[in-house]
Length: 439
Ligand SMILES: NC(=O)c1ccc[n+]([C@@H]2O[C@H](COP(=O)([O-])OP(=O)(O)OC[C@H]3O[C@@H](n4cnc5c(N)ncnc54)[C@H](O)[C@@H]3O)[C@@H](O)[C@H]2O)c1
View (cartoon, rainbow, N blue to C red):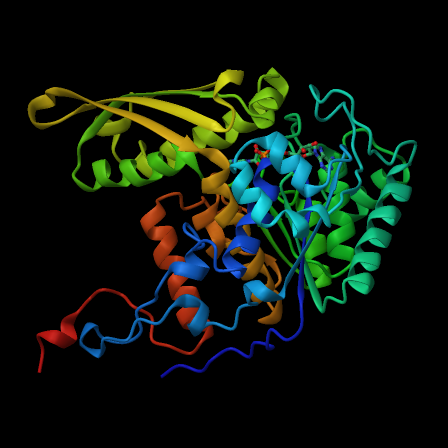
């Protein structure tokens, strides 16, 4: 049996800080509170509901993941956040309209206690948010970082938490190509001092988190921790980072279906994806600059999974298009249509239609929970920098420079589970299975 990695125990409380207290964050808080009270099961969360096989199939040993690795328990989580609106988590959840009032009322007392800290926010990076009333305004970049560090320390002290993680659940920021200010940590720190306009608010949160010893996961598609300067900072501070963009809805479906078509060597000629969405996220994404961030993160997935350079006859001519349309009547109930033009034996065409009537934040909240728990585990295991084994959760997984990301959900799942086995000193599962046939 291989040696287990030393992992510090999950003693005391874990603070989960979310820049952004909108639909995803409040659904996360409320769901964890409901699970704690025994009102609901944490469905969709691998850390809470998933099992992991250990040893041979004949050993019949598949514990729950949360019993296998030393994760923080749901009872030990303390939530906090920032938002440019003053609504407490109960009011914000009511506005988001994801959970029904009777579900929110059941945990209303606890939700009302979570009030947002004033946000480091700029309408240059997130347009379409009207009437914001909880913004720490007039601060230079350095003052903003200082304020966030103070917020983190105050939360640590007043809530008596032993460890913290930060998960970005804020709006999608405008798409910008990284510039020289993002190249090295020294460039970034010079940019902070000079108030460089290319430094986004999410990057200030990430900088504040990492310099405070807090792991950072990015649930949105903006460039935040996937920048050389921030990777360098995470390495220097010895803190884990992961990103980006929660893999829910249509992209989840894409990364389930595409590996199956490829496994059967079926060709794909076209993949047309469109969505209607009526929540605040949809409103923000209605702005072309914000949508560009999302489009970039959504488009890369198929290209990587199908590998047209290896399979030119099957995927060389693939036409892939993604659209999101803001349509208020639907609220958080997104509808995602996919038309997939495939071809088979002798090139005969076929079509697949997917109509996924999903609830965006119902799918995203358990991912935010798992990321918080796994990032904390990684920190206690002494892991630093990019946590590629968490690709499973992201539309646009962050990797080491020069390495293409793995988007196939089945490869991502194997990687995640084998990482846990490896850390816990268990044999990796290769699915070779020779031992069942050879004496
Ligand atoms: N719901 C999903 O399935 C899903 C999937 C993938 C990614 N995401 C991403 O997760 C993020 C959150 O989604 P949501 O549905 O909760 O959106 P939301 O609009 O309901 O919530 C985002 C919140 O972030 C706040 N915010 C904006 N800028 C901020 C800042 N600088 N500091 C602190 N708060 C800030 C907004 O006021 C808002 O309340 C979005 O970026 C979205 O694209 C969501």
